[in-house]
Length: 281
Image (cartoon, rainbow, N blue to C red; front, side, top):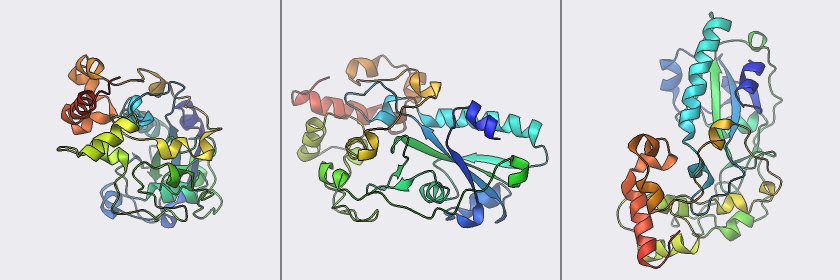
């Protein structure tokens, strides 16, 4: 299993018993035939490349990570049928039965920042999280359980809170310390309907038409963070998203982008609002 993961670009992974994880969607465990004796292989999927995006979040500049996860899941299925015909393995990401951030923390893959994101010492917070749940033992997997790391938090230096353009991280002091009345700029760029003048100004002032990486970029762990070695994320990176780039995307290419889930209308609205106020890329 270690060789399989590394061959597919997963360098950081660990195993914890399912019973130590926070169960959020028990029906997904039941549906896939897992009980409390299952094991969880947590893993980090780094996605940041050396191509720095101009007006969109890093995760949106690369292809949709769900495509990578789907391909990895298919490979895992084929590998498991050959290597572990007696076992059950299932890959999850995003739509998961467990709290992924908590699981990665207790397995030693990172700690929680004041912005609520998992921070890896090697990749900072520019990682997607995934996990393989299995009824195989660690002996069968050829792996060892991670040490009991507990849930650790960041330095609480205040950098993300001070830089947040919407002020949704009120102050450094805990991962639950958010201003519930303020809305993250990333969420503003993705909301449907019309934006207010203040919201449009926030997009323009912070050079974005989709997403926001400000709290991640100012994090001290990002200064020394490495880039992804996974070829999937290095291919077809969009550094600048404008009307010309968007119009040249056929439906298949558009659907391969992380912002496609909202449809073209939201991106087109953001670009139009910025253009009407003199901001173009």
